[in-house]
Amino acid sequence: MRRKMSRGGAYFHAGMREQMARRVKLGQTKKDANLNREAVAQVLCYCIMAAARDVLGMNTQEIVTLTVRMNERAEVYTIQRQAVGAAKARKRLEERSDTLLQEPFILPAGKAFRTENGKEVLAERRDAADMVVRYAAEAMDSMGRRKDIAALLTEAKANYNQFLGWAEDGEWVAYERLRRVVADVYEVEAEVVQTPGKKPIFAKEF
Image (cartoon, rainbow, N blue to C red; front, side, top):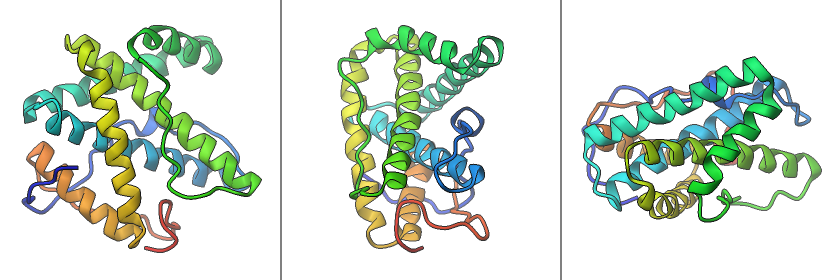
């Protein structure tokens, strides 16, 4: 992420929290599994917005529009899931977005997931990321920027990899660096808020 200096400050956009938190069980509590999906989805969203600025030259208003359009596409999925069930809603999402994606988006693992539980965690992370990417592709298409989708996602993946690299120094370090990116991209103040009692997701320690 080609980060400029930020202004400091007030909060991470909640974004697609409800749309991302599919109830699963990975050998941990359902709540923890939801938080894992949510965290990956939010980080990837910010990586996408940073990519929109850095490689596509989007200004703040255009990035806000992209964010809103992504949320709208997530809401469409949620409504359809309630109406026809998760499997059919997901199939419809894939049918709409497959033609917009030149290749499957594989979320970087960042570390080896050797246990069965770890492999399931990685699969859930990649599933959450796949949904975010499809929302982004639909949003870009609605903005008349279909030709820019591939470049956007390539840079977003690189940004996510960079975030994982930051996390090697601790999760708090990674989120603090991401906070500066978010503050600069949206031109708002932002702060990192830790959920009490929760374990780190991207690092071994905070």
